[in-house]
Length: 128
Image 1: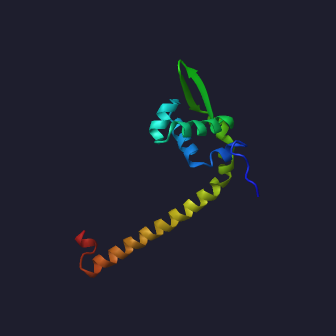
Image 2: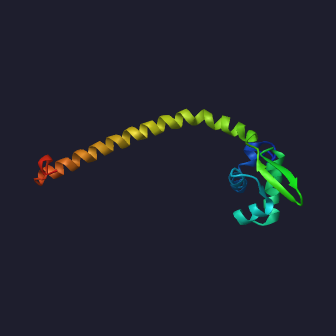
Image 3: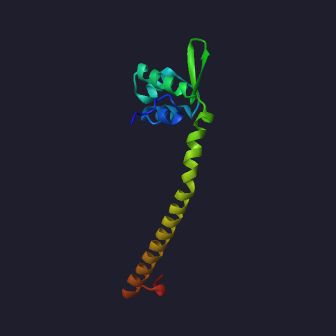
């Protein structure tokens, strides 16, 4: 099965880990390319290539300021990803609640074991 073009939609664009790293950096605010190159430890041509893909899907916007081009995140373009992930949020919450219950049960079992251990060594409640 042929894979969709990287620039077909935001899902394909952010499938690449380096592009997600760029988005993470831009989430903190607007940056020129040279800052992205330094922070990410990539070559300028690589960063520019990734920025072009992110711009084509609308996830990144650019503006000129003097001789610099400043890139910023366009979070609205990421909304389809958010909406898709949101469908699974309830399932995650239920699993986390189940895990919390198991951990709570384990914690109370450990406390009971600790109390029994103290009682066997004459260190019960009176010694505390």
